[in-house]
Length: 273
Image 1 (cartoon, rainbow, N blue to C red):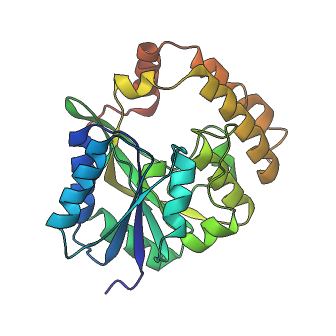
Image 2 (cartoon, rainbow, N blue to C red; image 1 turned 90 degrees about the vertical axis):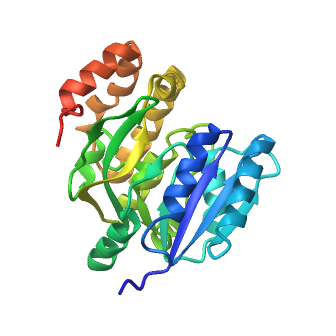
């Protein structure tokens, strides 16, 4: 019998209605039912609160905690507010435009109880407006060097030991780290001795479409360089890390469609199986 107390943390800012409904449903319909769902509304339009209220009423037997920021504060601040209100030992991430596959929570908790890893994640399914189209797989036991090329965990697919997150200072809230906050947090955690594991099952569906790709600005790539530069220093990855700092700005210059084709080939992410 699984013993770990769990808090699911979900930041929300104006997602598409159907995506939000699917995300919440995928959480509340998990086989493992002993958890609280904490939703932080980052000053979304009124329809978001209406949808959440419907779920609170429909799933009255579940503990759903709704929080609303006084002003739009960004993903990192919203996640930190969820953490501050979380009672669970384990924090399971869920984004409002993705969804969890059946038995995701059970698998994450079993792995956590077996390994006591500070970060427990999984491989993922990729989908867009047309449905599932591919996958992305991650190393089983990421080490510090895995952070050189890219973040070795899918953020939304993660379960995090709350104690380790707090010890690392939680998510950094700054314009300098916006959209890279998980990279900064995970590198800080690893620099403090944290360990992680990726379950070799695809348990989380990540929304990767042309729309989400277009939302990524070149300025985000410059931020990524700064975050990596600081993180590599903490992880003692220099001088090898110097060459990897060139990757984000170079990748940012590649047209989105061409980049998608390169990733498909490099990571075999459109293969079946």
